Image 1 (tube, helix red, strand yellow):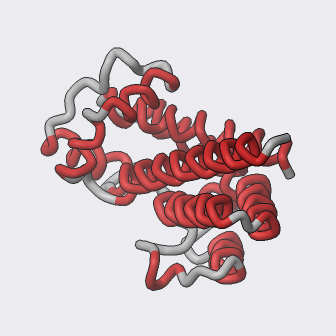
Image 2 (cartoon, rainbow, N blue to C red):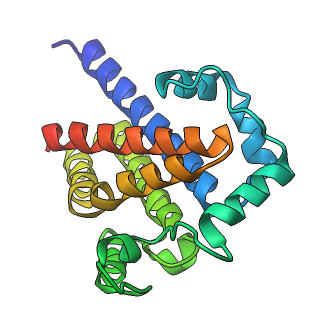
Length: 212
């Protein structure tokens, strides 16, 4: 393989890692809080239109009125009343599960062992869906940087970490959580975001399992 082809492959891999990082970051924002103006603006970009098309939602997201979305967000994730807790400990802990369960501690250790401090870099408890997606955003960003620097050992280490996190944790609960959101959401926006997140995580888990 020529040097030009090698450089081109590295550039393409780095670009793909950055695109993955961007999508993880976008999805983290979707589940972190009520939709912001910046988030709604991003939805109108061509790049996001392509992501929607891949998710089978090229027809649009329906009502994106901020007030309507804020009401839906509260109903789905905060309550009062029945809601879908966005924490791994609740979904993996079995009957009677509560916050700060064993899964929460596992995520905290994993994030810190990977060289991150969730308390300063992330929002909410370490096993909140948005925090876990932010972690994947950051680790894929570091993968892109390692690819650009030609650090193959670092690339392999980061890819191995992503694969472990997806197979041992995120991939075990996030798809089921997203399915519940898709089933209960009344607005197309959250139905589509849940489906996009579920499909992306399952695709990532399968891809990284193959590579690692």
